Length: 407
Image 1 (cartoon, one colour):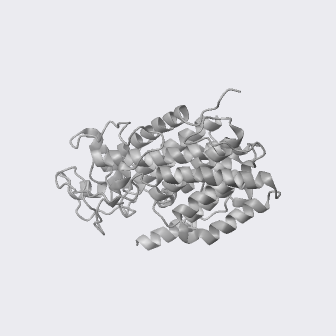
Image 2 (cartoon, helix red, strand yellow; image 1 turned 90 degrees about the vertical axis):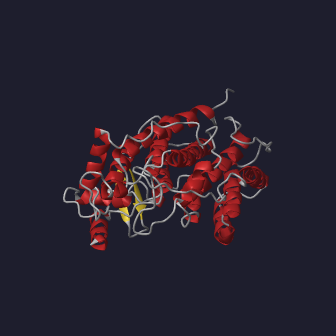
Image 3 (tube, rainbow, N blue to C red; image 1 turned 30 degrees about the vertical axis):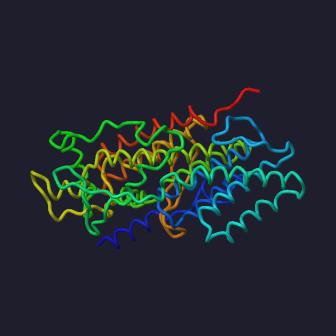
């Protein structure tokens, strides 16, 4: 049944890539390396990809800014020869970080660097730019080598009403709890920002939340439309893939400089990473059980056989990590670009997967909120609170880092 449902959704949603097609958005060296970084991190977790892109793009920004000196640096402002190439600095920084992160992909990354550098004339400007980029990247590698992402953190689940515990079918542990303890980029700590917390289990609003998931998020729901089913399945896409596609489309054709694009992608991906850290810290603080547990073990009208459309991820309902990251990304891009972006598309599942097109940032963020309910894996309140938290992270990011300097 489930495989048929997914095949139906794929068939109904397979459309041509529009604004996100590579030939329309490979605008400059920054977007080229954005796609390279996404490809290099394809096999790692969504959280791991967020970290990789944040480190990569922050290093690219500081490398380019070492030459332009138009903004406050994030980590370091090294001296760079005046004739240094910004494009070479960006490529050198990205390559150095990504080879550190993914040494087994060195050959592919070396080829990407050659492609970038072959576009530039040989000479001191290119050489100085590459050297600057590599020097900046090494500072980032040293700064992030012990940020906590590789630590092993144990977690003991609860067993009482409302407490998260492993969910079927695999009953996997809360292994991703480590992300709530990783060093953030902009926030002063993983717990700098607070969330209101889950609704009381006996509140009318929580009952409404669970009733909504039970009705529309069930595997065999009669209320969920084909488009809602497709949106739910599409929401399995990594947030980094969705929101970097939005950014690439938004900057294409704007005539942006290298430093302007470097700043957009650095701040976007740092906000995505800090949203991940903050969300997982709150999940650890407020480990609310998932809808599948709430419905199967309900005090009134339990349904022990209820199943969601999608397999429930192995971490608590509150807050929705996808909504925190989407809220942060959408708000960051809106603040930086001054508008809601342009029409863009993103694809989940490769060239034969699901592609969805959005009119702008706001529509994409709203669909993520809805889709996690339609998928049967999150309550509405966990989604909405997540979006609000993401907005707060975005606003702090734009206020605190990479601000323009007066000349």
